Amino acid sequence: MKTIGFKWVALFVVSVCAVSVSAQSDLTVKVKNIRSAKGKVMIAADKGQYAMVDAMGDTVTLVLKEVPEGKCKLYVYHDENGNYQLDREDGIPAENCAIVDLDMTAEAKTIDVELKDVKALQDKAKK
Image (cartoon, rainbow, N blue to C red; front, side, top):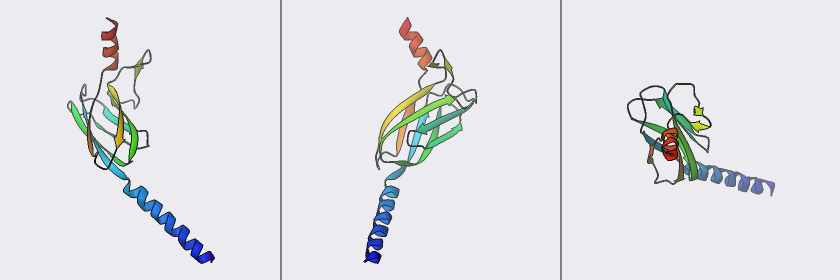
């Protein structure tokens, strides 16, 4: 009897693992509006995936591996000075950045993200 119970538990564990593996996809992110060819462009998902590439031209492409299906938030920024953090002036991002809410599905394989100069947008709004 214990052997039958163990087999059912083992079968359940294998089934859950198979479902969780199949519910993940790679996501290609095309990042636009990069201010210069200095530093790196970095991306992180709230599910733990991250990537970075050298800034080259005004557009780069990054790939996030094994992003689980479901709602996800992406944080993207251009680390122009290479200090591996989003610089701020008075709490406002000084480097171009973007936050994207995404509903990750098996069909969502590629997205475009445009970085924004938040400081310039806020200065413009004050005028």
